[in-house]
Length: 211
Image (cartoon, rainbow, N blue to C red; front, side):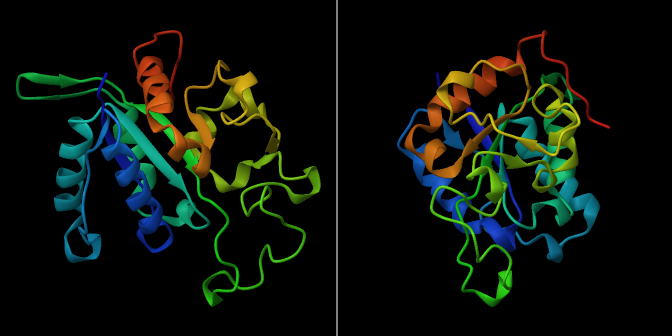
């Protein structure tokens, strides 16, 4: 079943990942529903909210690119909140979106943008988002947007690390509302995760927090 997918991301970190997701969706039944080169700095906040809200309203799944600076994005938290709320516009209603967090692949640490952080102790299976002392298996809670953390209580339970990503097939049925998956895994089969997220959005056994 095709789904409309909105991609939430920090432009300076993840425009390239957004493009990869767009290309992957074009080859599948789901498709990208979002901005293409819209520069937020050029517009007032009220204009941006109207623009982004319209796209999210017409989508069913939100993909959040988890990049090194996503937590300082002005818009990602707002887009997440809008995605997980129900809205009515004129005579039409929109339910909450399913949410997928795609963990960006390891950045190029030779770039001055990232300084020296993460240069030591990492390998191809253990990138910037994971606890290097666990062999790259535990996702660092601190890299996720606050609203994602609030909706991942079953995974974290107050702990700072979590070792069960969606890319681990044995944990595909865990009870968190937000799905977390590595970029490379998601791009291999995006429809698989989009379908699961969509089903969770309409499953009343999943509760969400938006504040």
